[in-house]
Length: 130
Image (cartoon, rainbow, N blue to C red; front, side):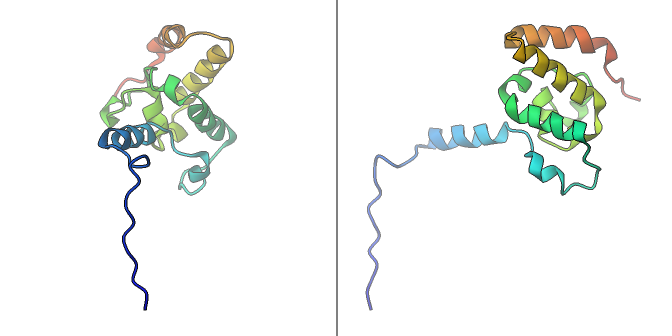
């Protein structure tokens, strides 16, 4: 019978508490993976798939953009939050914001300019609570 001795931890490979917290926080600020949408009860259309792909591609940008679909009661603080849940699947306004942000980003606009353009374009179209 051989006995296993615990190996000594490698000090170079140990993560600090701050590293772990940063990694956890980074993982929390990502949209749902497109592959997970197919398991939802809602129908998955091509515009929905495209919007979630845009959220994956532009996660840090979407995290800086406001959303005007009245998702604040869902405790959403940015457009990214709409894509961290299934909310983006059923909200045409969120999908429109995603497409607009993508077009502006591909045109080389800064995040600040994109945010201003989103506000100018969608503020008046926001969905009011019933």
